[in-house]
Image (cartoon, rainbow, N blue to C red; front, side):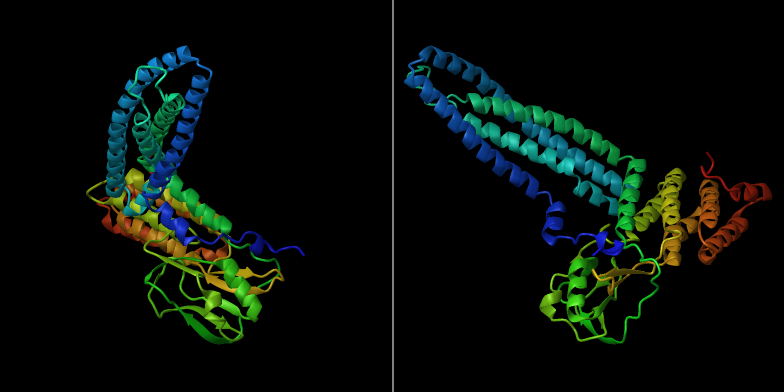
Length: 438
């Protein structure tokens, strides 16, 4: 049997453990230090086996050369150990400065990009692992000069340390490059847009020829059990499977991104009895902040925040607002002809088993444009770009979706007309331009 597109494109559920580890900084360094300890044990065993083999062959001349090499290597390893602590301090300082700048110039919501940056965690982890390795290697150096009394010469360990230093330098260059990119507003906005389009791509594709389903009578609802927080994710596959097994349709009451409290209804049951609570366990994921996963409006929320921060008197950067508007227009254009309001998830037989509410077209347009439009008065660069974007959306959107676009265009024109000091200023501010003022 061929699966419907909605089943084939079903997004994977969030793992609470994986999300917790991605939002923390302790796991990667701890895992790296444990891994390097295991590697060091193996390297030490190899070095010991090498010395034992040379002593059995009575090749003391080679052992003497290795001891002289060890003296030089010890100085290098000691220098590396001291330098690693300095490097760790530099990485930590750069990260703090980048986070502070992002919070002040963009929006506190983009700090999540820095916290979850894989290159930052990898750099920090490798630096700490290299430092731990140097301490372990220093304990393997013998203080004897007689090759007949030598028990261990850290040859493999010294080579491993040099390899870790080379990897640390490479990661440091990549880390600086990635951090500088994240401090540039154009890359941050592009990253937000790409994450938002992933949400769009994961939405179920409507089945041709099938309209809105009849959910049947609402028989019961399931309350939220657990801590209060932001609804981040629902386990779609599990809910569809449970609904199919019990012959019901489940309807998610809050939207992804809503704040839920214990006892609040989260699922409505249509057409049958309530499934057992144990079957619905771990089907709802709640956290302290919103994520891109299944949250169609989170990207627009961040883009609006960045535009508002750019238009604030403290920052006064309308060009940043225009860059955010570019992505808002792009996102709305991609959704201009897609079915919204509800995502219908079907089972293998094509029957609707889960109805998930998503923001409607009017809500998305208001989210992306309302706050920026309110601050566009007095910034002709922003008003011109917004008018050009609205004109483009009016060409793309079907007739039934043009009302909110026309409303925003009329409100913007009215506000600029009232605020303009002269007719030439008003005419200039109301002239559509995709670059604002270029």
